[in-house]
Image (cartoon, rainbow, N blue to C red):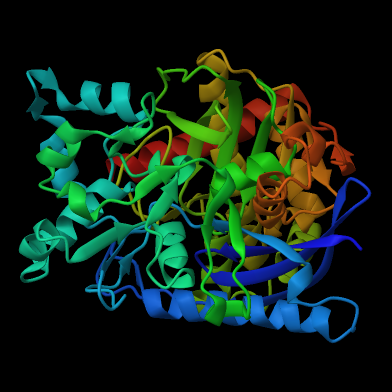
Length: 506
């Protein structure tokens, strides 16, 4: 009988459990379950979540997905070969080692509260070297509130007694993967994989260990840091109470690295872009940790066995969450499907309206935490559909900025593989092809984040020989080719660039 892989996908807006059957060289979805999770916005630029809610939603969705499989009577827990975990990255949790209780809400990756601290870091020096150069060389990242380091330092500074307790070994730090594994193992395993570690701004991506100088700079005790492990293998085990059996956690990757694997981008030069709450473009660079001259990030793509692969990444903070904002805050749409209808009515012409969705600042290549959202170009001739169309297109213009930066870094993209909930929208995919001027390939399974975690777990369990074996079944469901004239494309891109300049100088 074929074996099963349980993928746990803990994202910013939901937690999902997906059960895959591994048979005939493929991973097939048997069942899935999902629970939405909420964000709290206590102040301008602050974004928090309740770690206990993230854990409970993850466990509940896993049980619900497994229950659907068990109901059919063919499978039981004995058939589950292992678990793959993928997660929202950079989100920071500090919890008590003895109880598992978080001492402060999870500070989400979108949070900008440490912007002032980051400004101070840019003028600091470490061992006589400019801080920006130190951070870029060792971590591959830029100085920005996005990453975990300043979030963790903020918690230790602002929660009474936290620093002393951390020094005494009473507290644990982790990104969401680490926190979930700690809970799943009932505290037996305090680990994180190399992909998540590489997003903390505390990990040397060349040695794959925590950087002592950066820990010391932020006054972060080494005692609270998780062990860094590979992305595939028998990495940890669940406690029997969680699922009725002791299951191996055999695959771990941050959501964007998991999507890279799920899209079959395991060779240098292959690129993917994921459209979820945010948008993330990633290009595989092989064994080379390539330094960017364009404010892009160098990150660990994955580690399987002794093989470590790297990637260049561009991060957009606001994508699908902007559509959610149109629905929940403005009431301009009732569902995401309304954006397609609005786009069809405008014919993809926003009539001069541009949106800069800087709700929580701008990510790559600008890295400007002080920018806020802007709608520009409005006239009395514009209507609701023009605004909705402009919001949808803003995601594409941000992607174009990233790919242009990658090309200047020597990482020109020949084809872009896209995934995430937004790409079921044909109009969005076509506009991507038009503005990028290249083929955009949408796979059969657009939820490639969970699929990538399942692939890593299947390799870690020995169900596939390697990643090439696991990703060989990837297929495009549809390929979109450019249709816009060069003149039209250039004019649209220039219009968005002008809007960004206004947003950054107002």
